[in-house]
Length: 213
Image (cartoon, rainbow, N blue to C red; front, side, top):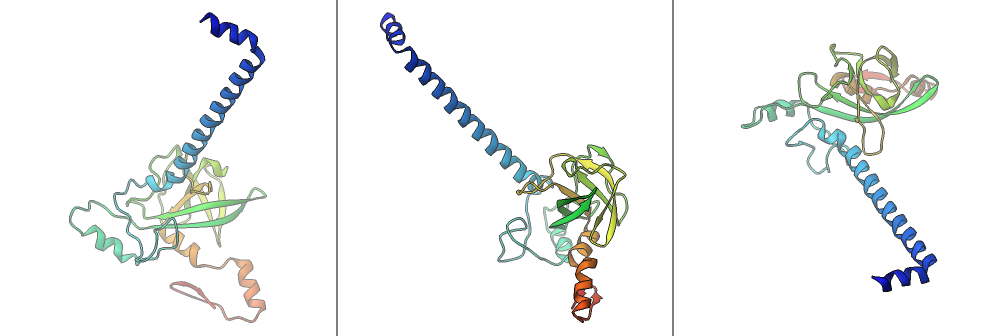
């Protein structure tokens, strides 16, 4: 013990520098662990929210989060009739940009069927979607407040509720709308795009699937 103390006194600067280096190393390691766990938690927030046991996606794709996966809406009814299935829901995911309060918001839009799995699990403020069209529930990180309206595509939606911790792997905050509104939003052209196509002389008509040029 005395020998160790003498060695520390002899090389006090080296000892202090070593302790500082070890402390800095531990700080960096703990910070990296915390950042990693935070990224994983954020990336899995939307995946875990529906508490689904099985995700049904298009054959040959890597799922709804890695790439586009399109399946008929009737698949949900077929899955719901399978033995052991208590409930099933259809969900639509898409990234969009929307203007609000003079700024551009990048949003992760989740379309779901009210009354089926896929919607927000816990409303932190306000209420859930109560009508079939033009209502949304937003994550607090969007900066939206209950009662405000925001234009998504060609329609204005009113914010009726707020949730916390709902975002995609890229950190974009989520908003929940009905599946019908999400499908319409995904297939429509915004007014600016329509004007460009009209200037080119293109014919534009709307089918059940959306706008066709």
